Length: 399
Ligand code: HEM
Image (cartoon, rainbow, N blue to C red):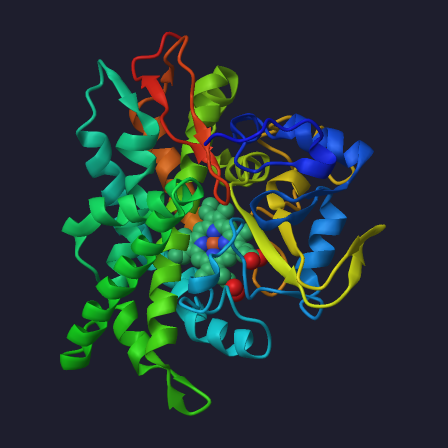
């Protein structure tokens, strides 16, 4: 996108800037020291707290900061009421009920039941990689695992996987430059789920969409808008986030042979390492809308202002984490908020953790010496969900 280059990140930051998407950490470090709550007029205007405490304070304060618009990019006025995606776009008290309905599907027990299928998916993907060759750890592997798991849960057609993946890319990556595409894809996703809902009204199945149709809120079935919005959320929240995390974890191991070798030698460390990789490469930035004039730290915020919540920036705050910019695979104390904090904390965190652990374990078992192809530029992208979009790796690995 053609935009004016940023001269001053504290008053004019740009979340679509390629440099920001590629390596935002020095920018956040500088802001934390000079102007911990930055502002911009770009993309409809927003405010960007960069330290852990300020980000957490906004996320906890649901009275002053609403989730009615959680998108980092502005919603065009004509579509602002088109999509509700409970519970992520809801405030209390409705949020509490909308979230409660989904909790059982993402409990540790429910996730445990999905582990075997996830291992099978990882193995299927690894089976088709040529051991003597170069592969794209993002496009050939990371990208497929979460979409296959969530479509399995929703009970939607596995052969539509390429379309779901394109939809996620449209919504989280291409919409930044092509807002009309974002709108038409949103309509396409809702229309797709309308068809799925209609099928299940004729005959229920053993899947999450059928359970949503059976659920009640205040003694009444969920509205169609609620069911469709929740399906939209689960498909989108489940795909790009987790593939970005699996991708950045594999990118890290492909570029840090000492960490790769340690996990190969000590696979029991993988769950702890996954937490550290989530902290260091947290993918998700969310947004809130101020509902009254207030302040974040010393920075005044006005009613209607959009506030971004860059959880990845808070996760690198040196006030909260020793050696915040280093990846310490066995970091013992790790209060990261890659999954957010407060009432909207990620409902899929058990599932995401399981997928990450399975994906890394299976990959390392098969390709213990893989490494990034020398000399390639890995493209990191994403305004709301950041991750490496292609990761060319040599599966033989020299080191
Ligand atoms: C590594 C992977 C993931 C990361 C980093 C992540 C991150 C987040 C974050 C930061 C939030 C908080 C949103 C806010 O404060 O506004 C969130 C909420 C949510 N996530 Fe995830 N997520 C991941 C995977 C998943 C998966 C696999 C699912 C399930 C399909 C999922 C479903 C949700 C839902 C439903 C919410 C809304 C919860 C609420 O509003 O109460 N996420 N996620």
